Every structure is written in structure tokens, then in C-alpha cells.
Image 1 (cartoon, rainbow, N blue to C red):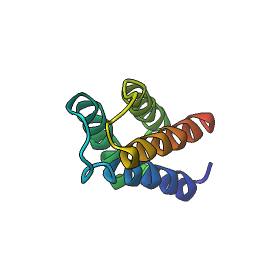
Image 2: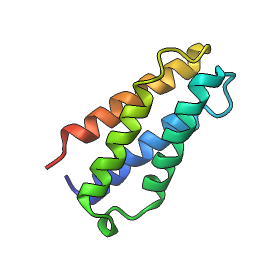
Image 3: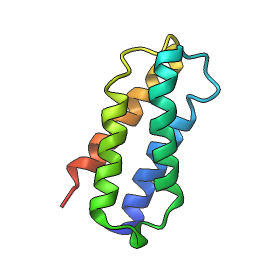
Length: 97
């Protein structure tokens, strides 16, 4: 995958998680989403060309693991953002070389 395409996917992942910040979500879900958001933000802010591929896959995998702990947020819009973030993370991981 080209660096620009990967950067775009990482940016999408971060945007979906960042969109949950203003939503009234349950405390337990907030903990998992907040940590996933922090990792996604670091990846979105980095230049992919400067990161080792293994680091990118490991961090995205960690985001996916964190999000797997979120069944519901207590807010329908936040649930949709989390589901979309999971889909983006899964799409990135499927591209692992």
C-alpha cells in the first residue's frame, strides 16, 4: 500500500474515534475509546514513511483490540463511529504485508 493511501486510512481511523469525544458515552466505553483514540492520533500525526511497518501494524492492531472491548457506548451516534473505526482498522490490518 502506498504511504499516502495508508496515511489516509490512518487519518480516517483517527477521525472516527475523535468524533466520539463530544458524545455522551458510558464511562467504561470511554476508557477503551480514549486509549484507542490516543494511539490513532499518534499514527495520524506521524509521517508513515518515517515509521517502521511493524510499528504501524502493531499499533493499529492494538486499536482494534481496544475497540473489541466496546460493545455499546450508550449513544447511537458514538456506536456508529466506533463501528466505522473498527471497519477502518480491520481494512488497514488486511493490507499488512
